[in-house]
Amino acid sequence: MRRLIVPAVLLGLAACGQSAPLKPATGQQLPVAPYGRDGREVAENLLKPTPQAAPERSVELRKRSEERLQDPFDLPPPDDE
Image (cartoon, rainbow, N blue to C red; front, top):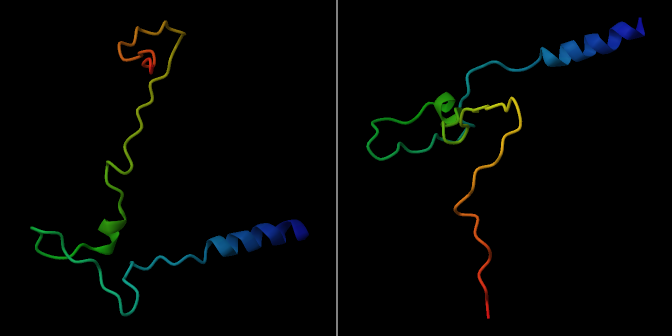
């Protein structure tokens, strides 16, 4: 019986999330519209990360070890005399 109580409580807690649309807090407003835009942004659009903030991941797997190419910018430190 105890084995069923813990999963039931966790399932109940997971199911109690709010799924209503997002709105600004009472007494608050959304940020002003950017220059050149007609209206204000919707809250859902403001929460989406830009491609620069969350870039796509490029996964290039190495199948075997490879020799490194010569790096022309790998210079020794300057001599400070």
